Length: 308
Image (cartoon, rainbow, N blue to C red; front, side):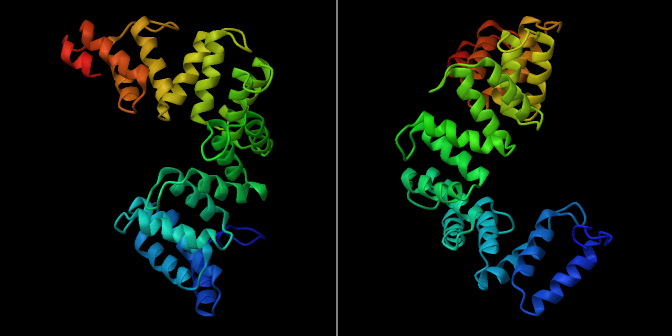
């Protein structure tokens, strides 16, 4: 009834009734399924965190690792509970120690950022490695990121490439984009624009913002593809609308300089530069400063220019 599989019509109300019946009979996984239904908001389009919290607590009391991870997420983001990083880390730890891959990833994030727990990049890498060794794509991506930057492990671009390749082979957009960057820049491999273009294209087809931005870069520069500014800025726009700050800065440049057939518009340029700047994008901040220094769309203000 939850999925509509096996010739049974999808009916969430009946699914909830059956899960509740199973839970009352001692079926612990049903507690998690109930929490997940209420948290997702698929019943009426709005998450019911009150119900989700109640069912997660019931499952966690029975040491269900999915429910422990769920409680960790609610406390991490303050969803109908007071935001509490220490409690979130504790729930993730309980889940992770039972072998729950999502719990292990989330605990790794807490160690990596030092949220509710002493920052320890080495332990973060250790928790990512557990899921990676079991073939989990997200764990492999997280571990690859650690190797690419030397966080908690010795920097190793060959291991980075290997892990990204594993995730990319599973169709994971983050892995495809990461592997594309390796071939684009020749990190530990022979630079190959063709392979980079193919990998960015596959990730962009999944609307992954970073890949859309990287594919736009290749069209703009004619790297691995015929130079096409119109196609480039179409991709930049899609990426920018998804919040990518580099793409937002590029959209600002489009309107500042009248690129790809666009009329010069200082107001639209400033709007895009500011979106990038408030995300701490250095180029966006520089361009906002430029707008204030030269009085383009905004009043000329040297002090604000210096501040940006």
